[in-house]
Image: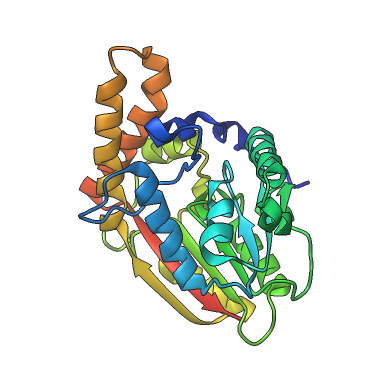
Length: 283
């Protein structure tokens, strides 16, 4: 298994953001916040649906999901898109175990046969099995910026996608386009904070670099969309209310991660250092 030095950042704490729906739901992504979005869960479903449309998920899709977190998105692909088969990878043992327990519970419930099509694997995206042309779509929902080396994941994905139309679709956090030329390179202390959050410095590249990497492997028709304004502000606002509602009852260390995340999101919004981008490429 490929070494994953940042696994300690991937635990179960963020599922508390599901608030009153925890533990019934276990979303842990940044979400996509429209003007009428009313909850963290809804925002996460919005982002998941955005990626699903980009990847063209449907009942005939053989799907590979890279970085499934605590598992909620896997059940979303089954419930909403009825994917034919799902193989999902995640490096964190504690998240994998939590998701597997929930999956076994769902399988035990009468009528849970649809969950038999799910295969969960505890390893990093870089170490996904080489299964040539086994998937119609390979996706990463709010996870690619945590990969040890994103381009290695692109390479394996290309091998594993079917020819003539296999789709790679990610939502990702990237540098602003031509960040160095425009004076938008984040300072060293900011990169150190990102590292604490499980984001390697080597992943700080712009969309132009990502496109060149994909095209260099043979992908075509690379398309991207900057959705920063639908992600960062909404999540920051939600964290503000989440922190405020628990400040009097939670000890400071339980709120530290949420405060740090909000701080980083606000810095990105103010300085333009990082952008949140969805992109798709076809084999």
